[in-house]
Length: 89
Image 1 (cartoon, rainbow, N blue to C red):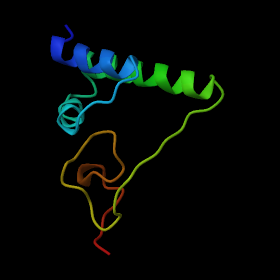
Image 2 (image 1 turned 60 degrees about the vertical axis):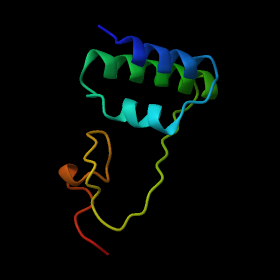
Image 3 (image 1 turned 180 degrees about the vertical axis):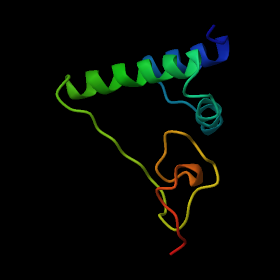
Image 4 (image 1 turned 90 degrees about the vertical axis):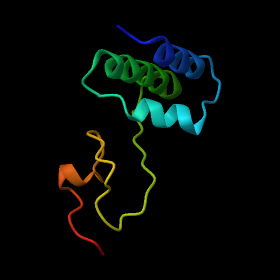
């Protein structure tokens, strides 16, 4: 079941509105393998396909590549648990 809070945030984005930093943080805490995670990824895919007219997919990340990130997001190459970035520069 998708919580009303997640649904409200995702619908806000799909309507072209901006979301707050707190809303972004809330979405990033959701398990990407959960039903809500799938709902968010489906919405993101829809936005990507619309923006690229189905011709490309854009990946972007902002961060300082100084050390593994302690946030440990499963999708992120910088997450300490994913062992992609392993040393402090």
